[in-house]
Image (cartoon, rainbow, N blue to C red; front, side, top):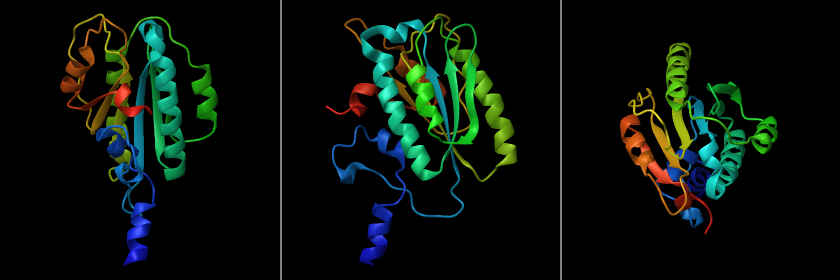
Length: 199
């Protein structure tokens, strides 16, 4: 009994589930997956790297959080789909590959600039997910959206067909607070990055 419980407490971390409860302060706050053979996971990560995310170290802190996320995905053998929303159009970095060390190099080189094609990124992600869900119906898919919510157009965002978490990286004395509205439109959970970073 003890050994079985220990295995459940030391298996692969349920990173999105852990984040939903806020920043883990002690080991008991970390959620683990039950070990099952069929639980293939895909983490769809959309990163807003528009010019506004340069302010107040927002993108820099988001990169730290993403590095941790990629490490956990690698340990859990989760697959990653990574889409950046900056410049004129969203761009895929990886699509459904196992997490690897190459992601860290990409992350280090990631800079902010240009507009925020977030609506286009979500539409693209939605199309890609629909195809993937037909190919891998048993796959557990999750969305992680990292954004400061500073979008120009007011078009509502389309919810994706998987559970999601929006991580708000907006900082500074004047906050527009749009990310909470976006999370509601996406039917996703909402967390501010300050809740998730080490104090």
